[in-house]
Image 1 (cartoon, rainbow over the protein chains, first blue to last red):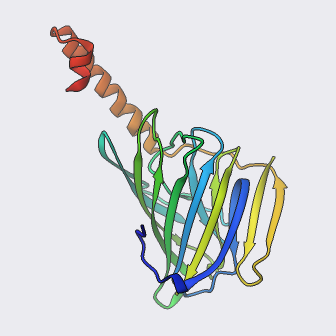
Image 2: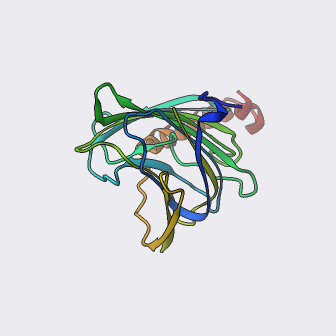
Image 3: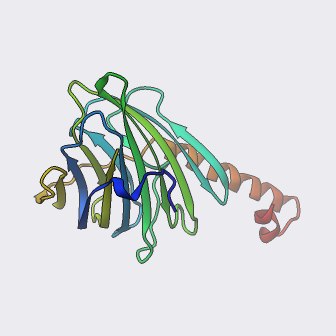
Length: 168
Length: 60
């Protein structure tokens, strides 16, 4: 199933990783729409996944997110600029043998490649002790230079899986 | 220490660096979730005091 649609022919590159604490995708084609599809197994519980652009840890980000799970819908976000964009609303405990799925879309601002918007979903197996959760997140970044890389971070212990990068 | 993967879209090459992990800070939203859990538990406790069983209270 695709939540963010794109043609299969737009697949640009595919990579895999093992026990990664972070994955960085360099040399984005500035100005183009990019889509990232990540399927991964988390190797520890209590995971967090967040992203940054251009390896910038400054307070140049803002985001909001929703969780849909058996308790209903919970919303969250940042009212002031922060140093990262969380791809989920809160942490989650992952069932080790089931994969999680993250899909994100990156769009550059009109006529300004220093600003980007990202939105996406994260399906994780459990959020608390026995939940299935569906996270929808969105965020924006305003940098000092053209956005040419994105990094997804996770907690220690890392993640194992693959990423597909689409471009159109 | 952890493995940090760097993928290059132009060349298709993968580089792996071993370096310290960044300290991960829980997002503020966790505080809200904790507050909701406490509120739920408080409601369950009140229902039990009213005579419901634990299962009945949790089901509501």
